[in-house]
Length: 327
Image (cartoon, rainbow, N blue to C red; front, side, top):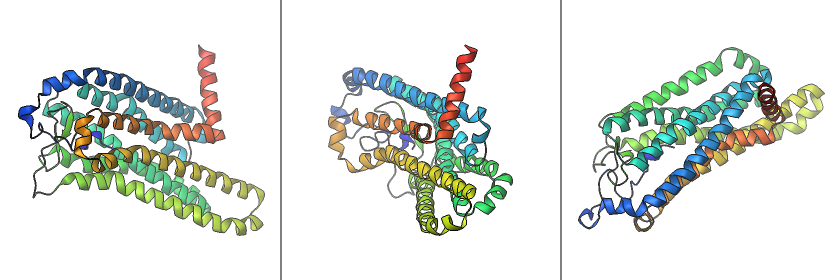
C-alpha cells in the first residue's frame, strides 16, 4: 500500500491540527524524537531483512532453469519489486519522516516511483493467479499460454497501469501528493470537501481490484480442482497426475501467501480509518508502528515458497553453495 496516503490523515492531513495554537510542533518532535529513532532503526532493519530474503530468492530463480519458466518469471519479477520496495523506497520514505524536511518536488518525485512500484506489485499478484488458473484448469493450453510471451505482456501491462494510476496523484487533484506539516514527510494534499477525491479511485484500481480478483481466481481454482480430482485420478496417467498435483500445490501456497500479504497491508488502512482520532493524538507513534507491520508483508512470498516448495528451497541451497564455493 502507499503509506503516504494514510500517513497522519486522521490527525492533520497536510496541515497542522485545528488546535495548532495550543500545539507546538517543535515540542512534539522533541517529545517523540527517541521513539522515532527506535522505530526508524527497527523498521529499517526489518526492511533490510525482508529485502535480503527477496534478493536471495531472486538469485535462486536466476540460476535455476526450472524456476525461470511459467509462473517462475512472474514470481521472480515480484521478488525484484519487493527488493526495490524494501531496500530503496521504504528507506527513502522513513528518512523523510525522521528528517521531517521535505519539499513538494521531492515528495512528488519519490512518491511517483513509490506508488508505481507498489502498483506493479499488486497487479503482479493478480497475473500470478491468472497463470496458476490456466496451468491447473487448462493444462493443455498452458504451454501455448506461456510461449506466446504472455509473461512479458503481463509485466509490461502492470507497469503501464502503474504509470496511468499514479500520474493524476502528481497533479493538483483533490487527494494528490502533498507535505504533512506535523511529521514533515510526504502525505496527501489538503482535502477539499465537495470535490472529487482521487485517492479512492487510485486505491481501488491499484490495490483492491487486483487483490480481490486474485483471491476470487484462487478460490474458483481450488474449488474446481477439488471437484475434478476424484474423476481425473482414474483417467490420468501417473505423470500427468503428478504434474497436476504439483501445480495445484503451488497454487495453494501462492493463495495462502497472498492472504497473509493482504492482511499485513490492509491492517494499516483499516485500523487508521476505524480507530478514533483521540487514539492517534494520545499515541502519535502508533501509525508508524502500523507501517512496520506492513513492511513485514514483503517477506511473505519468499518465506512461504522457500519453506514450502522443494524446488525453490533447492534453488536457494544451490545459490548459497555457489556463493560459498567462490568465497
